[in-house]
Image (cartoon, rainbow, N blue to C red; front, side, top):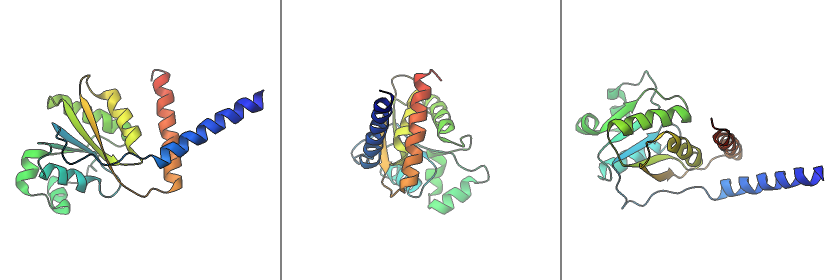
Length: 177
């Protein structure tokens, strides 16, 4: 009986991982407009995509969460070729976050300050599920989150680690933490 139970748990875990790895979230259609864009720093393409969405007028403002404390606004604008006008009016650099959970806290505070009712969350496809879970825990009720995943080619190790982190976060949620 014990072996059957363990086999069942392993099988469920394996099918869950296969689903996680194969059915990665995709990009949001360009027709969708939101009140804000939140991009989590990390893998290549995230910030560039969020800036493209901002420049296309799909949202009036952008939070870049998890920026290194040593990065200045001028350095950011230079690296990503952001016009001064756009930086001044529409881009906020968030320096408080150091992991996904603190990204969610920083983003929720920013969303509340700007009275946003809808958010476009931009992060890597493999990171989207956990980032959305964390953000959903922190946002005020009634805020709609649109998932805009940046396609990537994660390694099997990266997928496995992210899947384990997601399961741990779900377990903590169920435990009330």
